[in-house]
Length: 330
Ligand code: P6P
Image (cartoon, rainbow, N blue to C red; front, top):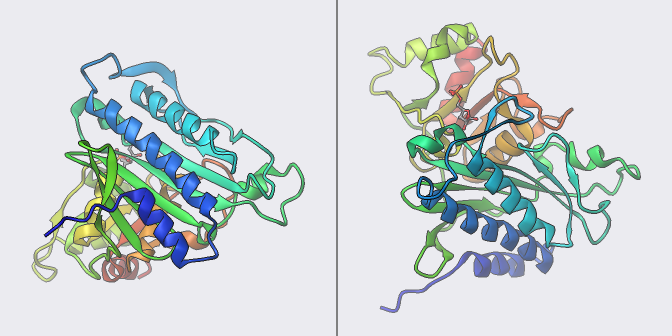
């Protein structure tokens, strides 16, 4: 039987034909991101063969040592998006301030927020890393010159979100609000090929993903949950923690379970960033039937107050997130 090849760009166009509200220019924007991630994937595959491993000696706005691949990934995405005249603003984990390509108007109406290479501390030991992106539209009611009004929008206003995981293969998952769709990069043709449409997250799962080293710093309710999962009554829980958000989330999306990054003494508001990590992954999780909360409210309902704002994150199978909350709120 002839094997169909449906590449990402075709899929995006088909999605747009099915949803007339979206304009063709949206696929033009997403194609910039897919191009960038193909370039990043090529660099990641060659890590260690050319001088791109290790640290640059610089630190980013997060105070983290910047790895050379971080810089390459950030510059690649910024360059690819820079050629899209419908992008007004870019926000990156690596940049202190937003990049204003053009004051958002009817043409330059998209705001793209991204973590160019999440988990980059794992680069030198060949652990999976990833790119996470979130796309907003300009706010019609934003004041002139009020760049932050366009950026600091709650996650439920995202028009698209996705991630790419650079692992044994390079996989992209994205949503535009009509389900989660997954593609694998086929190196022989240099294109992302559709592998799964309408991905759904199992409603439950006995895998919990947390850095247990901080367990004594977590709120008591979280400690109670972590004690409970180890009891015979709970039965059969397993711990998986890669320490790379995109990899831990990708496993949770496909196999179910729950990922937790609660408040710690070092990160009392949580470690992960709201705008370009928690929001896009929460959009994907909910589109796949899962849920995402900071322990007090739905991640997508949070009103951001600053560019690199951090949040606690409990994300995964609906039943397991609810179970964690039942302990945290007890
Ligand atoms: P910890 C990587 O640095 C990262 O931002 C996420 O990818 C990952 O989930 C988290 O930090 C790991 O943090 O404190 O467990 O090392």
